[in-house]
Amino acid sequence: MSARDQAPAPTAQDQADQHDLRIHRAKQLARPVMHAGVKKFIAGFCWHKGDREMVVYMEGSAEPVRPADITILEQPT
Image 1 (cartoon, rainbow, N blue to C red):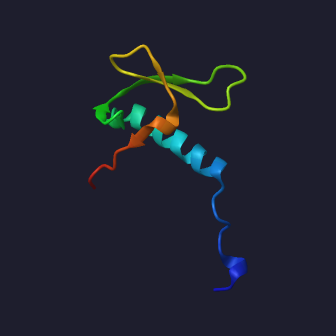
Image 2: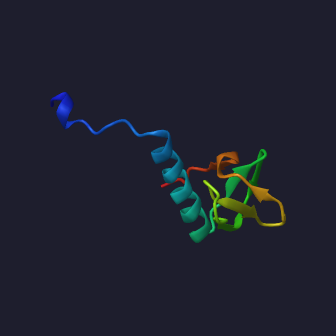
């Protein structure tokens, strides 16, 4: 396998996009995530016009949360 056959290393934007997709999936499947050291569920998320990242809302709280503050919990297979 040559260096040309290897996929390029993911950029910071690629990693952020993947994290956003994992947040979508956790919401769709009602899977818990970790925020501030506590397991919580995602109530919703949105992109406000002009924002570079989504805003996430957790169940039981009206305060917006940055996606970077959420840890996706691995699910057993």
